[in-house]
Amino acid sequence: MQWIASFKTFDAAYVACLRSVYESYEFVNAPRGIPSRELLNVSFLLMAPRERVPYLGSRKTNIIFNFAHALWCLSGRDDLESIAYYAPTLHRFSADGHRLTGSAYGPRIFGPGAGAARPQWEQVAHLLREDPDSKRAVIQIFDSSELLVADNIDVSCTLALQFFTRDRRLHATCYMRANNAFQGIVGDVFSNLPPGVPGHPTRPADGELCPPRRVHARH
Image (cartoon, rainbow, N blue to C red; front, side, top):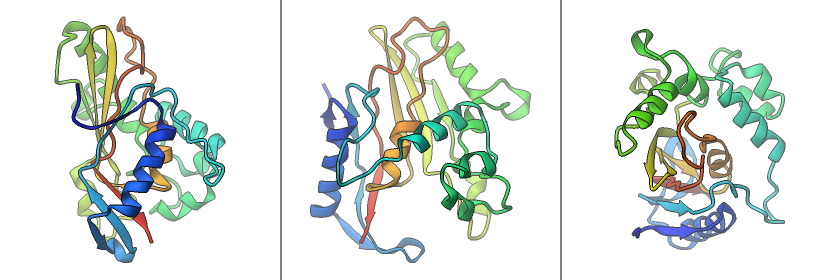
């Protein structure tokens, strides 16, 4: 069916990603001075994307932050104060000490679109209701203007989300610019799986996820 690695749960996918980037890395480099081992063009498929938490004794997961971050995104917020309560280290990613830009996906997904258009989420829902076979149901998150800011510390790791309805199942594909295979991927997989397209008669969030396009791990 697919030519990529397939896993039932994220727990299994997470272990496989860590093993791959540790044992079979392609490059050793140091973007922004951070030493890392790197694999390019990595993809995997989750068959049960609701099972999105790794259960490893050696890798403690801050599940409270994961839920807080998902709700922060779903509510369309970008304020630092509310999310930094659960992860104080996020303060260092805010340019003005009040807002997060690149890592605040909520306003880009659920906020007003360019030119007073309706939010991207509503556009995707409408498109899939009108044309369930569409390949145009894309939500863009990365903005090219992020690269215009010198030394921008908060550039979106997620490029886009794409949705498909096939055989009355909803499939979600997440395209990543980069992903930290040990830390970042845990939060991204948890938060980047929206609950479903409203108003569409499919089983929500029951399908595919294919992150990331590039994975790296710090030495």
